[in-house]
Length: 263
Image (cartoon, rainbow, N blue to C red):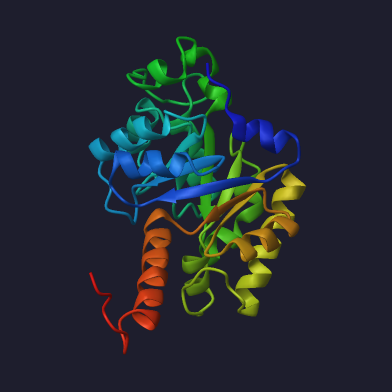
Protein backbone atom coordinates (compact mmCIF):
# COMPACT_ATOMS: atom_id res chain seq x y z
CA UNK A 1 0.00 0.00 0.00
CA UNK A 2 1.23 3.52 -0.77
CA UNK A 3 2.60 5.32 2.25
CA UNK A 4 0.23 7.77 3.86
CA UNK A 5 2.79 10.55 4.16
CA UNK A 6 0.51 12.70 6.31
CA UNK A 7 0.96 10.20 9.13
CA UNK A 8 4.72 10.25 8.55
CA UNK A 9 4.78 14.06 8.79
CA UNK A 10 2.73 14.02 11.98
CA UNK A 11 4.90 11.35 13.57
CA UNK A 12 7.89 13.64 13.06
CA UNK A 13 6.02 16.33 14.98
CA UNK A 14 5.70 18.53 11.89
CA UNK A 15 2.76 20.30 10.28
CA UNK A 16 1.21 19.31 6.95
CA UNK A 17 0.07 21.92 4.44
CA UNK A 18 -3.27 21.06 2.88
CA UNK A 19 -4.88 22.48 -0.25
CA UNK A 20 -8.63 22.81 -0.80
CA UNK A 21 -10.41 21.85 -4.01
CA UNK A 22 -13.81 23.33 -4.81
CA UNK A 23 -13.51 23.61 -8.61
CA UNK A 24 -15.07 20.51 -10.19
CA UNK A 25 -12.21 19.59 -12.50
CA UNK A 26 -9.68 16.79 -12.67
CA UNK A 27 -7.27 19.10 -14.46
CA UNK A 28 -7.42 21.88 -11.87
CA UNK A 29 -6.91 19.24 -9.17
CA UNK A 30 -3.86 18.00 -11.05
CA UNK A 31 -2.51 21.54 -11.33
CA UNK A 32 -2.94 22.07 -7.58
CA UNK A 33 -1.25 18.73 -6.90
CA UNK A 34 1.94 20.04 -8.51
CA UNK A 35 2.21 23.13 -6.28
CA UNK A 36 3.88 21.60 -3.23
CA UNK A 37 0.96 20.72 -0.94
CA UNK A 38 1.29 17.70 1.34
CA UNK A 39 -2.38 16.86 0.82
CA UNK A 40 -5.40 18.06 -1.11
CA UNK A 41 -9.01 17.87 0.04
CA UNK A 42 -11.86 17.50 -2.43
CA UNK A 43 -14.75 19.50 -0.96
CA UNK A 44 -18.02 17.66 -1.50
CA UNK A 45 -19.92 19.64 1.12
CA UNK A 46 -19.92 23.31 0.12
CA UNK A 47 -18.22 23.05 -3.25
CA UNK A 48 -19.97 22.18 -6.52
CA UNK A 49 -18.34 18.76 -6.75
CA UNK A 50 -20.40 15.63 -7.31
CA UNK A 51 -19.19 12.05 -6.96
CA UNK A 52 -18.17 11.38 -10.54
CA UNK A 53 -16.17 14.61 -10.78
CA UNK A 54 -14.63 13.84 -7.39
CA UNK A 55 -13.30 10.57 -8.80
CA UNK A 56 -11.65 12.41 -11.69
CA UNK A 57 -10.14 14.87 -9.22
CA UNK A 58 -8.70 12.01 -7.17
CA UNK A 59 -7.25 10.62 -10.39
CA UNK A 60 -5.65 14.00 -11.13
CA UNK A 61 -4.07 14.10 -7.68
CA UNK A 62 -2.74 10.56 -8.12
CA UNK A 63 -0.29 11.76 -10.78
CA UNK A 64 1.74 13.00 -7.80
CA UNK A 65 2.64 11.83 -4.31
CA UNK A 66 0.16 14.25 -2.72
CA UNK A 67 -2.26 12.62 -0.27
CA UNK A 68 -5.92 12.86 -1.42
CA UNK A 69 -8.63 13.55 1.15
CA UNK A 70 -12.32 14.38 0.84
CA UNK A 71 -14.71 16.42 2.89
CA UNK A 72 -17.99 14.55 2.77
CA UNK A 73 -21.33 16.38 2.86
CA UNK A 74 -22.50 14.73 6.08
CA UNK A 75 -21.87 11.89 8.51
CA UNK A 76 -23.50 9.49 6.06
CA UNK A 77 -21.99 5.99 5.90
CA UNK A 78 -22.98 5.48 2.26
CA UNK A 79 -21.19 8.63 1.05
CA UNK A 80 -18.20 8.01 3.32
CA UNK A 81 -17.66 4.44 2.15
CA UNK A 82 -18.13 5.35 -1.51
CA UNK A 83 -15.49 8.12 -1.54
CA UNK A 84 -13.05 5.89 0.37
CA UNK A 85 -13.63 3.19 -2.25
CA UNK A 86 -12.78 5.83 -4.87
CA UNK A 87 -9.32 6.34 -3.36
CA UNK A 88 -9.54 9.06 -0.73
CA UNK A 89 -6.92 8.49 1.98
CA UNK A 90 -9.22 9.95 4.59
CA UNK A 91 -12.38 11.91 5.23
CA UNK A 92 -13.15 15.22 6.87
CA UNK A 93 -16.70 15.12 8.21
CA UNK A 94 -18.74 18.23 9.13
CA UNK A 95 -20.90 18.85 12.17
CA UNK A 96 -19.70 16.07 14.45
CA UNK A 97 -21.05 17.19 17.81
CA UNK A 98 -21.07 14.17 20.11
CA UNK A 99 -19.06 11.11 21.02
CA UNK A 100 -21.73 8.92 19.45
CA UNK A 101 -21.47 10.76 16.14
CA UNK A 102 -17.68 10.48 16.20
CA UNK A 103 -17.94 6.75 16.89
CA UNK A 104 -20.34 6.35 13.96
CA UNK A 105 -17.88 8.18 11.70
CA UNK A 106 -15.00 5.94 12.73
CA UNK A 107 -17.05 2.80 12.23
CA UNK A 108 -18.08 3.87 8.73
CA UNK A 109 -14.39 4.30 7.84
CA UNK A 110 -13.16 1.00 9.28
CA UNK A 111 -13.58 -2.56 8.09
CA UNK A 112 -14.78 -5.21 10.58
CA UNK A 113 -14.16 -5.90 13.35
CA UNK A 114 -13.29 -2.24 14.08
CA UNK A 115 -16.22 -0.90 12.08
CA UNK A 116 -18.88 -1.75 9.52
CA UNK A 117 -17.37 -0.43 6.30
CA UNK A 118 -18.50 -2.61 3.41
CA UNK A 119 -15.86 -4.26 1.21
CA UNK A 120 -15.45 -2.89 -2.31
CA UNK A 121 -12.38 -0.64 -2.78
CA UNK A 122 -12.85 -0.56 -6.55
CA UNK A 123 -10.36 2.24 -7.21
CA UNK A 124 -8.65 2.41 -3.83
CA UNK A 125 -6.98 -0.97 -4.32
CA UNK A 126 -5.73 0.07 -7.77
CA UNK A 127 -4.32 3.37 -6.54
CA UNK A 128 -3.08 2.37 -3.09
CA UNK A 129 -2.03 -1.22 -3.70
CA UNK A 130 -3.23 -4.82 -3.66
CA UNK A 131 -2.73 -5.00 0.12
CA UNK A 132 -5.20 -2.16 0.69
CA UNK A 133 -7.53 -4.31 2.74
CA UNK A 134 -4.74 -5.31 5.12
CA UNK A 135 -3.73 -1.73 5.93
CA UNK A 136 -6.72 0.49 5.30
CA UNK A 137 -7.91 0.47 8.90
CA UNK A 138 -4.56 1.85 10.04
CA UNK A 139 -3.82 4.18 7.15
CA UNK A 140 -7.16 5.86 6.38
CA UNK A 141 -7.49 9.15 8.27
CA UNK A 142 -10.68 9.97 10.21
CA UNK A 143 -11.13 13.68 10.84
CA UNK A 144 -14.38 15.01 12.36
CA UNK A 145 -14.98 18.75 12.22
CA UNK A 146 -15.30 20.80 15.40
CA UNK A 147 -17.44 23.79 14.52
CA UNK A 148 -20.31 24.16 16.99
CA UNK A 149 -20.88 25.03 20.63
CA UNK A 150 -22.10 21.48 21.23
CA UNK A 151 -18.92 20.01 19.78
CA UNK A 152 -16.81 22.24 22.03
CA UNK A 153 -18.82 21.13 25.03
CA UNK A 154 -18.18 17.49 24.09
CA UNK A 155 -14.62 18.04 22.88
CA UNK A 156 -12.88 15.66 25.29
CA UNK A 157 -15.44 12.94 24.57
CA UNK A 158 -14.96 13.30 20.81
CA UNK A 159 -11.17 13.33 21.06
CA UNK A 160 -11.14 10.21 23.22
CA UNK A 161 -12.93 8.08 20.59
CA UNK A 162 -10.50 5.38 19.33
CA UNK A 163 -9.85 5.88 15.65
CA UNK A 164 -10.23 9.66 15.60
CA UNK A 165 -6.88 10.69 14.13
CA UNK A 166 -7.44 14.43 13.86
CA UNK A 167 -10.10 17.11 14.12
CA UNK A 168 -10.68 19.96 11.73
CA UNK A 169 -11.78 23.40 12.86
CA UNK A 170 -14.34 25.12 10.66
CA UNK A 171 -13.74 28.76 11.67
CA UNK A 172 -16.82 30.17 9.95
CA UNK A 173 -19.34 27.87 11.63
CA UNK A 174 -17.41 28.14 14.88
CA UNK A 175 -17.74 31.92 14.57
CA UNK A 176 -21.51 31.62 14.16
CA UNK A 177 -21.63 29.52 17.33
CA UNK A 178 -20.25 32.52 19.24
CA UNK A 179 -22.46 35.08 17.52
CA UNK A 180 -19.55 36.41 15.44
CA UNK A 181 -19.35 37.12 11.74
CA UNK A 182 -18.46 33.91 9.87
CA UNK A 183 -14.96 34.20 8.41
CA UNK A 184 -11.55 32.62 8.28
CA UNK A 185 -8.46 34.01 10.07
CA UNK A 186 -10.55 35.05 13.05
CA UNK A 187 -9.43 37.74 15.45
CA UNK A 188 -12.64 37.87 17.52
CA UNK A 189 -11.70 36.86 21.04
CA UNK A 190 -14.27 34.08 21.68
CA UNK A 191 -13.35 32.25 18.47
CA UNK A 192 -9.61 32.71 18.98
CA UNK A 193 -9.90 31.34 22.50
CA UNK A 194 -11.93 28.36 21.27
CA UNK A 195 -9.28 27.59 18.64
CA UNK A 196 -6.64 27.61 21.36
CA UNK A 197 -8.73 25.35 23.58
CA UNK A 198 -9.10 22.86 20.72
CA UNK A 199 -5.35 22.81 20.05
CA UNK A 200 -4.55 22.20 23.71
CA UNK A 201 -7.15 19.45 24.03
CA UNK A 202 -5.80 17.73 20.91
CA UNK A 203 -2.31 17.73 22.35
CA UNK A 204 -3.60 16.19 25.57
CA UNK A 205 -5.36 13.39 23.70
CA UNK A 206 -2.64 12.80 21.09
CA UNK A 207 -4.94 13.88 18.26
CA UNK A 208 -3.88 16.12 15.38
CA UNK A 209 -5.43 19.59 15.28
CA UNK A 210 -6.37 20.96 11.87
CA UNK A 211 -7.81 24.29 10.75
CA UNK A 212 -8.83 26.16 7.59
CA UNK A 213 -7.00 29.44 6.95
CA UNK A 214 -7.40 32.26 4.45
CA UNK A 215 -3.73 33.30 4.41
CA UNK A 216 -0.28 31.84 4.84
CA UNK A 217 0.46 34.26 7.68
CA UNK A 218 -2.47 32.98 9.72
CA UNK A 219 -1.57 29.37 8.95
CA UNK A 220 1.95 29.95 10.28
CA UNK A 221 0.41 31.45 13.42
CA UNK A 222 -1.80 28.39 13.86
CA UNK A 223 1.18 26.06 13.51
CA UNK A 224 2.89 27.99 16.29
CA UNK A 225 -0.21 27.40 18.44
CA UNK A 226 -0.07 23.64 17.91
CA UNK A 227 -2.00 22.94 14.72
CA UNK A 228 -0.36 20.26 12.56
CA UNK A 229 -2.75 20.34 9.61
CA UNK A 230 -3.29 23.74 8.02
CA UNK A 231 -5.33 24.45 4.92
CA UNK A 232 -4.54 27.43 2.70
CA UNK A 233 -7.61 29.11 1.17
CA UNK A 234 -8.85 27.10 -1.88
CA UNK A 235 -8.31 26.68 -5.58
CA UNK A 236 -11.16 29.06 -6.43
CA UNK A 237 -9.91 31.70 -3.98
CA UNK A 238 -6.39 31.49 -5.40
CA UNK A 239 -7.68 31.82 -8.94
CA UNK A 240 -9.95 34.76 -8.13
CA UNK A 241 -7.32 36.60 -6.09
CA UNK A 242 -4.59 36.29 -8.71
CA UNK A 243 -6.90 37.16 -11.57
CA UNK A 244 -8.17 40.27 -9.75
CA UNK A 245 -4.59 41.31 -8.93
CA UNK A 246 -3.40 41.03 -12.53
CA UNK A 247 -6.46 42.75 -13.99
CA UNK A 248 -6.07 45.53 -11.42
CA UNK A 249 -2.46 46.17 -12.45
CA UNK A 250 -3.40 46.45 -16.12
CA UNK A 251 -6.37 48.71 -15.43
CA UNK A 252 -4.30 50.96 -13.18
CA UNK A 253 -1.28 51.32 -15.45
CA UNK A 254 -2.29 50.44 -18.98
CA UNK A 255 -5.84 51.47 -19.81
CA UNK A 256 -6.12 55.10 -18.67
CA UNK A 257 -4.58 58.04 -20.49
CA UNK A 258 -2.01 55.99 -22.37
CA UNK A 259 -1.46 55.99 -26.08
CA UNK A 260 -1.85 52.86 -28.08
CA UNK A 261 1.45 51.59 -29.52
CA UNK A 262 2.11 52.18 -33.19
CA UNK A 263 2.45 49.06 -35.33
